[in-house]
Amino acid sequence: MRPQDYLSVMASPEIEALTQALSRLPGLGPRSARRAVLHLLKKRETALDPLLSALDAVSRGLSTCGACGNVDTSDPCAVCADPRRDARSLCVVEEVADLWALDRSRLFPGKFHVLGGRLSALEGVRPEDLRIDSLVRRVAAGGIDEVVLAMNATLDGQTTAHYLAERLESYPIRLTQLAHGLPVGGELDYLDEGTLAQALRARRPVA
Ligand SMILES: [Zn+2]
Image (cartoon, rainbow, N blue to C red; front, side, top):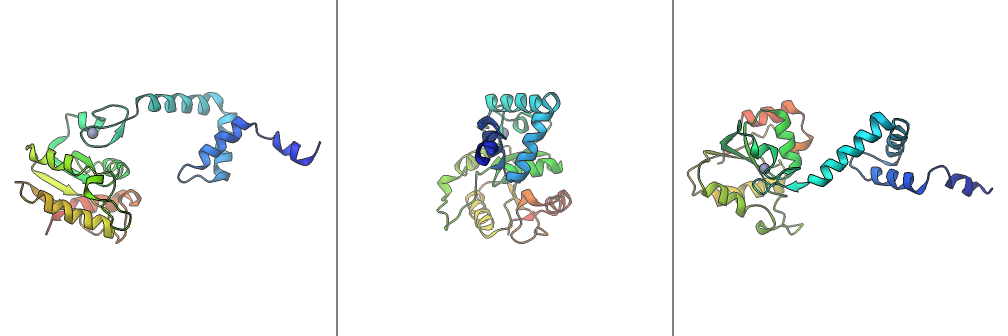
């Protein structure tokens, strides 16, 4: 047996494909993907089977919420469908990850609107590429007292916030934005919950 033949039977093509798929996930490289695969193979009942059924359930029900743009297994999503949330407050975020980060902080009791990105001259992202018209329609429909612009503290994030402020200025709402104790260049999803909570608590009117 040549050395390469021996190496090739260390992992079947199926296991190799699983390792490759996992290694493409954010935060996982080839090395940690291999460790994860080994763990899954050794712990079939407690790790592999629950993961498989969770993936299957998510994959079957996966949808984008028609109201807010969140990704969930139901439409409307769990956040929109929750009657305990205050529909008079609307928090606008760039990405689903930002919605999840703010929701984890449990400090915003209202509803959300996910733009699906940020305006960017460099990347050619225009207003019509984002969920901006549907945001304006939600606000125009009434019943909303406050819109919080929770864009990232990046140049594109702030450009987007200014654009939204202009689009929404004629509606009778309080327009606020996160206080920028946020580090400049900071992305919401990477902030610790204390910093995020502080930015939300100290939100201020859009100038
Ligand atoms: Zn929703």
